[in-house]
Image (cartoon, rainbow, N blue to C red; front, side, top):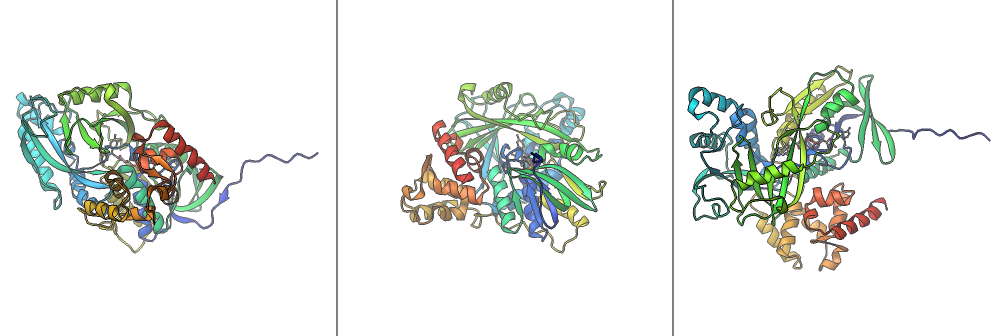
Length: 532
Ligand SMILES: Cc1cc2nc3c(=O)[nH]c(=O)nc-3n(C[C@H](O)[C@H](O)[C@H](O)COP(=O)(O)OP(=O)(O)OC[C@H]3O[C@@H](n4cnc5c(N)ncnc54)[C@H](O)[C@@H]3O)c2cc1C
């Protein structure tokens, strides 16, 4: 009997070529996709896993200028980021908000020896070698206040700590502190809201779709995507390589290009403890080793402490917070808090890899945090590579990327994203309390925690999730910690969620609150619902 040949699944060739294929659904890929589609490009974004599945859900979650980068003379980056904080706050007042940072001062604080500032200081004031004097901190904060054209955020203040709420959890040797402003952002929600907005404007967002091969043919890229339904082929006029930690693997592996530019992978880990103190400000702690860490109020009942800086060899090795990193963070914070922080206090940890441009810096801490964009046409079709960047500068990075894309594929439309709110963010920057009260009036069964959680996640879209519900029972199955079927359905249909992990650790942080059996039940329910 003739045998039917067993053949590899045929790749579906998707019809017309698109202008741009964006590789990577982190903040940079989603920000570029949103900006590009709004200018009139046809755009497909392919993400190998979940949106924000890599670095963009593992940040410290600050819209910040980066006070410490001033010591590296990164004035361009700091200025751009400082100005950007308020642009972003206005566009997403649900998922971002101002924070005050308390920087306790003590003469033992040390620089990282290799910063340009510490070298300069060592040259002119050799007796200060390695020290970070109070006047220098004040000068840095003065620049921080002045470079960024603040309108919403209050400026720096000096605190006398004894007898204050800010001083209460700290050791008594800290008597003086400086207080300055930066902002918080829910990083993984920022990514998904950019992807949603891009989709609403006409982009195609493909998650769980890995770019496994690409070659230039007749001036177009022919790209293979590995998807759950088998391989698919897609043609694009230009590629945007926003693969984050895999940007180098994409250049040298998948695209087989000869570029000299390299990525430097720097791992950063955070620990989460039960709440360590009672006020809503953050701490900026300087170490005796020249590094700094933050302690930040987190998810109402917790404190977030981070980060570390360590070179990370391989993007395919999943980053995790090692015991040594956890102990380092505990010991660092214990130099400040009265009650030592120990491994027993840690309820969760996470780790991410910064995909920095390799500028040959000696230490991981010193490697530039600025972004670098490179256009390459050597293969016969254009590709733009994205290195580095911050969550804070993603929108400006996208504008710079679009300027480069426009030089290759011209369109008539220019910058447009400043001042355009993300989904759910169309309300005043100080409007969260009023919106939360409105929601509770309309849905009296919501308690304060639940209503605030919904407004902080979905802003003006929260009522679309609750619909005509008159009681929690109307929202379907209760998965625990106020998560109900109606919200889970929204996350699946509107926000690209496919697994319980997508929901518990990226669309929300309810993973900190659900019990193991509750999380298992959510996973079971989603497996049946998503395949149904
Ligand atoms: C510890 C830490 C703390 C930080 N804190 C801050 C902070 O407080 N504030 C701030 O502004 N910035 C911060 N950053 C920086 C910021 O998080 C990163 O610069 C940013 O998230 C990088 O985004 P990205 O889109 O380039 O990369 P990623 O988020 O990693 O996205 C790249 C995506 O590409 C996908 N991908 C890779 N290969 C393929 C392929 N072949 N096919 C399809 N998809 C692919 C990956 O799955 C991934 O999702 C921090 C970074 C770290 C690590």
